View (spheres, rainbow, N blue to C red):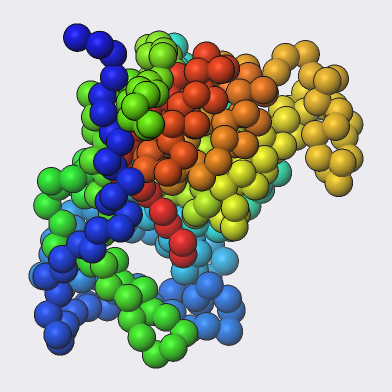
Length: 386
């Protein structure tokens, strides 16, 4: 049997209406949990509510164990809960450094490294953005990690618990908020998970958008199409190379982190660490370009190389190594043109994960093969706009 899983017809999903089961009148019960210091801005009063009829809020039990600066703001709450969602995808130790409801850096355990090293790698993925961040860990904070966190300015920390001695270190930071949560594994993440709440978004026109929460169908490598095949003009176009084991692990990491990035979203990962996150761009290739430039800039910052940020990554040749060599890239939607693939391939990126479904998928596959890149299709898009 020849190589190739036929995904030619997947593009039809974008033209197919999905039947909804929402009633003409929707009554959503909300129970007030707490008042917040303020909303997204100090002139916006705010409070935290939970959905009535679901025990998820009770199970996760996000609670403040040390306050600072008058309590928790809306952005603090968004950072904590979105960070929980991201680190919850990983069974091994993982840390998300959150800033403005986005991951500025993320790292999972690689080659058995300890939690403090995982945190430092997540922080230093973008140390400038990590200033005043929220740190979210899926493991208890130990003393070494507490020392690393306390060495820079952090707004808050959230973890399942704090080991003996760690709390004392962090309590010395007067304005640092410490939070705990429970049952991270009970948060809905994957397709088929029990989820009785909604994604509710207020629009400026006096309307409210209600949709099902996003549940990811990619639970592991078996859910990725690593040999996508497109039939076009009596020809078969198929990705020639499978990802190796290291690339596969990084592809899954990059895809799951992309679930927490605003579209157009690009995430670049190497050895379990985000090299760059390109978020919220209006064009796909622009998001790729932004992420690549950031990857070089952040690498130069880590090596102490002087560079003018206005000039982008013009000094990247001063680096001792190319941070993008053998890195992987995740895109939250398909590529409309081959420009993104050529840019990524030319910089050394070796594998890509993306939904597929472009009318030019045959050209995208050809471009990937030109650079000997592995390319996996998820057959699901993970747009997040706000």
